[in-house]
Image (cartoon, rainbow, N blue to C red; front, side, top):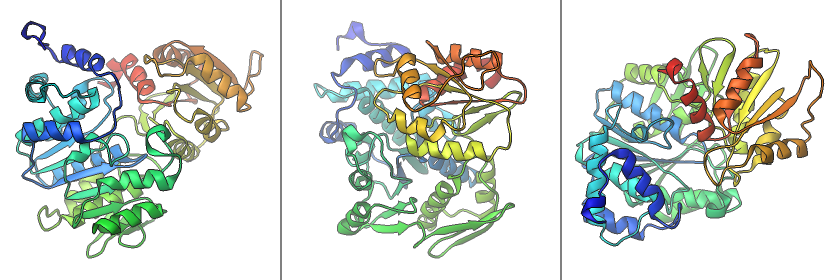
Length: 435
């Protein structure tokens, strides 16, 4: 890159990185590994990596919240972002500054030479460099796609967590849970703690962990949970956590995620001791946008990044648990390569009015394509003034949301889901209310 063309702002860097590499996803660790060595990225503290089809972000957020309550300096890499790229790199709970990110980008650019990196690989290396230089006491890294060939996997973590295994990203990871489980198990390391929070782990994951000599912790065998309406308890190999508050993150699967997080902390208890009160407070106060996030006010607005059938089934269950609402409006946008039919089939009985939207990416489904999928799935609009079911198309999430808001009464609810970009578009439109 010529000196005069060097970006000077974070926005300029991101624009450059989005257009530089020929592929948006280029699986493999050789190029990333070389640049990591050139940058001399190393962590002098415990590192936890978190992979999984769903639940990664929630698990990372719980770990961060508990560890910060215990007084540790915590670094977190989490993705994607909603409103600002800085959300991806958190140092002691605060998004990294533009200046810190630019310095990290410049370091990667200087060292990479003629090695080509995708947007994700470049930014992952930059954020890992930023966190390593910040001298954290514990670092949490969320895996992007799969595990074995994801850029985060150039780091040898002390604990690897796989939250759940389901069908997603089939063009890269395989079409069965066994194939996908093997890819996600690639984050496990010999002699290190390997946690699986999925209650029915694929045999391939267990076999891989055993074959490399990882210390495998399985839900139901090595750790578990139980609870009633007021509180819950975690039980591990050598540690019990009783009288716990339910995580402030809503949703049916959050105790699975919380249990996997507590298993990781149990495994690290000799180097990162944490008291009972810190665990309780950390779980009770954890925050994470867009994961069954219920916004205050009327009509009720729910933001959920459910974008595959597994997540959509959880969303459907969570909607059922909310009690009666006369009508439910959906703002729905999706990438075209997702199992759109599978998502619709999980939710079609829960939605009365569909406001489907295009998204600002070439690989997104158009609103008309989503409408066609709904019709194919048997969602039948009724063409009359008091219609119990409608499907309307919009160019943007903001326009779809505005329409839903104009039609919903104070006792109805609006659920925004299908893609991070769908939720981000509505967040942007509601920005004054959210901040």
